[in-house]
Length: 453
Image (tube, rainbow, N blue to C red; front, side, top):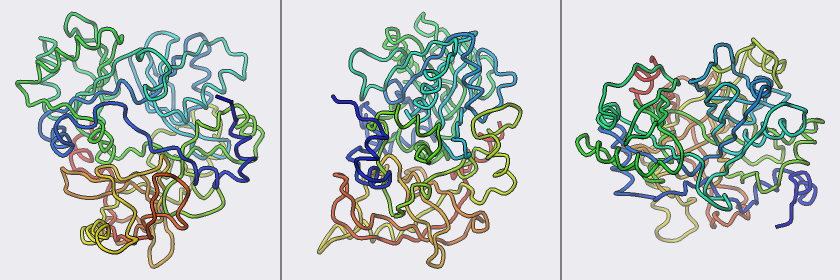
């Protein structure tokens, strides 16, 4: 395959919006079984008993090793690294020189001078670019997700146990009481006579552990977890259910990376970055200015991650923005009648509304739909889908702070105008769907008990 840089692709097309709006790249897929039973029951499992989700295949790992590994990460992450010792993890967030979001990932501190950055490619690419362009004493090993890996299995298996019975399943699988483990800290377990590392956290706003270890040991560990789960109502969750877990916990998975501005560092980055690394824009936001699609960490709830106790790319811009961030993250609960009408428009004469591919209705990697109040755009609706546990269609959104009070009535514009050349976009018409502003996370347990820990 001939290499084309992102810079060359933009020059060929004319501007980044046209490139991304018409890209054939599809929304991120989870290369695991779509459903083991059905996605409604699998969603219910993490609220009522325990769901087992296979994370082995859909994220990229970037292993950094060496004396300068922490230096690289500290210089790019908005996070504080004070006290970030072995056995800890954090949600690593990176921005461009103007303080606009590049992306986020989970950073594991595995051993002294050994780190694993796990997430979507946006922030992985950004970190790897900086490793390769400077004379750091660090080695980088990239393990692609299984959808694009050219050969062989992943380096690690990863299994997520989620739900009120997750601790009971893990305790039975290990045969001993669980150690006290703080949120986003790791502990070692013995399962099926294999040493398993476990990160204490939750994908769906429920109690849980992410368990990982060498790929060749994964099948034995999985068998032991399934056997232990028989007594606790464990349900295996497939790709469809898993893709919606973030709607309950409030994590926005794929913001568009703010890498298109005319700055020397970003110009160099676009020359380095393959064009195929960038996903498509979808949704009713319809501006020819790519910056209108950008987000900041404050827009999507990363306020708590930002610490000005070190130098990092974008620090000065974020310090200024911190004085009065204009937008904040919310959940939008879509109106039942309007959703029903949109889905019903598929019947009879058309064109109707853009198709809802339940349960995750996002159809592009970077979904951005207009949020209106009295006909004026006040924000952007991002990741969207159906939560069976709440029997609601919702989206995660960022809107102007003055309109973010729970109960505020807004409108989400669903669809694209004009229809783009993306193959997943059929002939349709824009559809206005009323929505109500709600807290984020939307699920009360995640807002109260889970978050308070």
